[in-house]
Length: 270
Image (cartoon, rainbow, N blue to C red; front, side):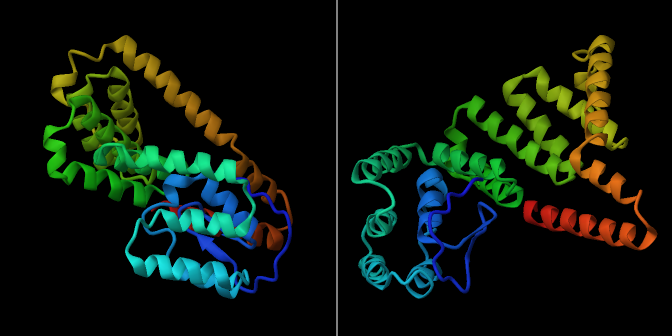
């Protein structure tokens, strides 16, 4: 995510937006995050902790007071977003009006479609744990029983993607299997096949054997090997390789720091 910094306010304790994985130091940065990611700024984003930050760190006491009163009123909580943007005066009235329209359009979506949109958005920011919770909630909803088969299949597919990205390959294979039963998309079988390469105790189910030809497997193997080659040349591994060329002390310390950063990134995903 890119954040525009216009002026540095005297913030002692920046506010961490966990869904985006960024700290904000100014009212402008907070405005930017809200305006460009409205679906993540809905449903509880405007919390009491954030209002405290707006009052105590950003020095916007009047705005915080208005927001606190509105929160206690029990009225439409989306209005908290616009109260803050208006007081911050970073976006014009016309821009705020356009955002109102976007938020209103999101609210008009079917509850399941809205939930999927939000989970899909979390995937974009590698918030896989939250996205998984979102997809599973959709699948557990009584409304899903009457949902379109294609919609349910896409939810299962995206759930599989999330599990694969946090290395829970068995759960990923199960989710992909359910996705294929709804969508009959051969690309899903390719994903399952790739999982068999990553975890040999996973195998293509017998009912897929007549669908997946040797030619398809050969093509998928080439794609898999190409992906491995690309990963081997990734920036992170290049950085680690460079460190191994340095003297032993710096090399081990550098490697430790890189590995620790990877661990932190993985924790954020899960």
